[in-house]
Image (cartoon, rainbow, N blue to C red; front, side, top):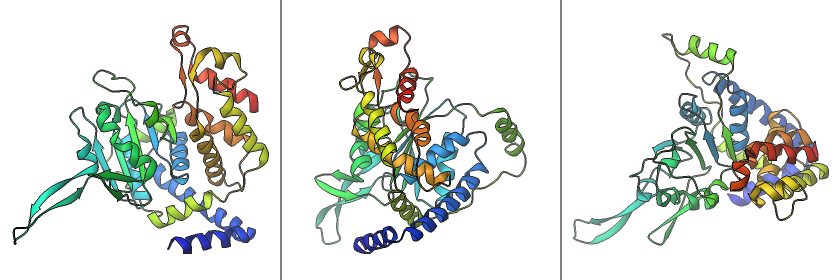
Length: 340
């Protein structure tokens, strides 16, 4: 099957007309998916776009916003629109790794023979919602590290592959910090994007009160399936990226590292900067965004549009910078000025 998929990808590459047609068709499919999500999620067009970019790039998403902004509904709607097997886990301080990954149980047959059998946990799905992920202990949070990077888990020395595709969409509440555990840098880096969910605009909130408080509530409709999403993720990797865009990505990311930056604010105020995963994420992200926007190749504008959500969780300020009121958003703006 893998060989067949590779041959299909090569055939697409060998025929530029086929590639153009495939990208056009994908753009129409994603537009239909966006419309389907828009039937339930109002006033969050930016959040929906960045979420779709993350899925097309095959990544994981961290949604941060106050309660009541539709984060959970967005994940549930994505599962229906893309036809994915989705699960939801409410992260709590008493949640254990086995509650996510699964565990081995000792069973005895009718003949008296005993053997261990692995019972899969909720992580064995295609779309996992980790609700309020920072409420679980670091031990439980780390249970997702291998799953998010390798798409498999190891239990009792045995590897178990996860379904394909596999995406983690985690949520955090930025207000209630008591009883929470900040995500470690290694886990933050595994999230493709950090999307800050703001309050809806006026028209969006007007749609909310009109469409969600009546007797008829809109229902999501399936637009794509898991197989189509996998093919879309493969197609996105074939979108050509110009040398100027690639160089802009490299310049931007490397300028965000205090060790290699020539920006004084970065050297002075940033304690650690984005790693190679940020470069990879920007390359995949600009490809996916160009497809969503109906273009055949990404531009510098795509890089600028994705810099904040891709870098904001991959950088940290020094203690003195935070005491002086320096913001990470301001630092990233300085990075964007280099390539704008």
